[in-house]
Amino acid sequence: ASFSLIGLGAWTHVTTATLHSAMNWHLCTVFQFADELIGGTNQMRFLGTGRGLSNLKEVALGLDYDGDLTRSVRGAIEQTSEFASRYDSLRARMLHFQDVLARQGPGVRVFSHRCVFCSLAVGDEENVVAAFPSQGLLRALEAELDASSSAQLFRIRESLMAIFTENGLRSLASKVKVA
Image (cartoon, rainbow, N blue to C red; front, side, top):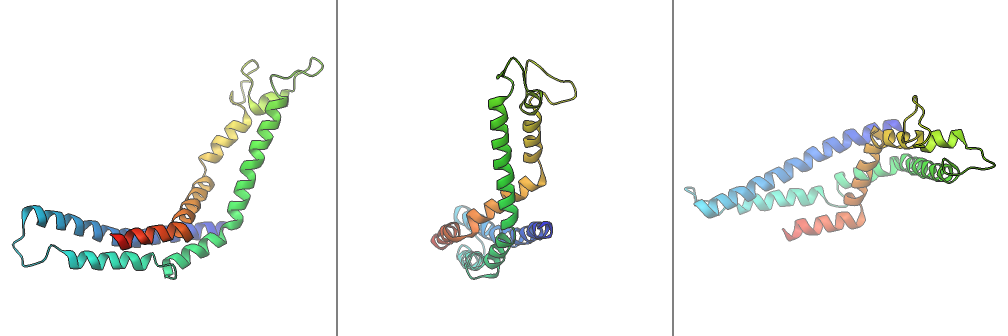
């Protein structure tokens, strides 16, 4: 799974560089078009529309559902599905564990006793222990997980799924065709 994630990261870098190049040429053409429209041109060109159309065709080919780019994205998404499932499961279990401990934790006294573990895990303003985070171990662990590379890879995967699969790809391709 870790090799798949490393591969996904490397592939994402290469793919975005390819799309960046095509979009960069397209934006350059748009700026050239605007410059020639406002300031005129000394050359006998028709406002750069031929190059703009060529650039849009390259972007459309890159976004084709059966093209190499989208096929590679789908393959990477399939290879990282187990990672995503486990990451979602970890987050759900942490949230559930935190919720259970909060219900039994600092504010609850059973037979005039307080659960020290619950207080350390979810945090207790009344009983702060110097060696432990004041917000609680679980919240500190959650913050560490949010800042981790696994969270970033999960977000990248979710973004790829939103853009390069079914409805997202259809929407993006139709926007390119309209442009």
